[in-house]
Length: 87
Image (cartoon, rainbow, N blue to C red; front, top):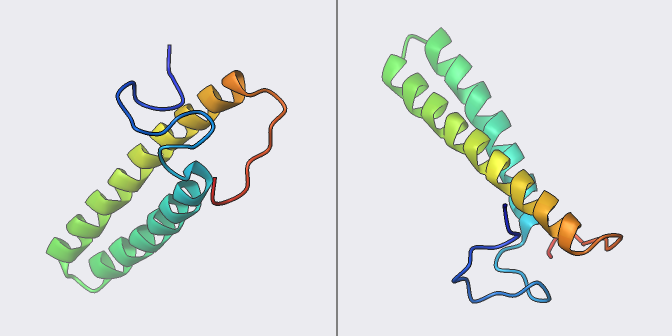
């Protein structure tokens, strides 16, 4: 079962370990930017930069999956509670 936070984290349900909604926005921005940069780098025949940007885009996708799992766990623990961008 996925919990909203890691077991040994200092945060609690009342005070989150990380701002998940803000992390979601930043990871989405990073995914879009790195994908565009990777495409532009490959189009400009700068393969090493394209590979680096593509790897960073993959990291953003993994982060998005982790964030969504933690948000789902938080929704299960706190049904009906809406969180702002910075919570």
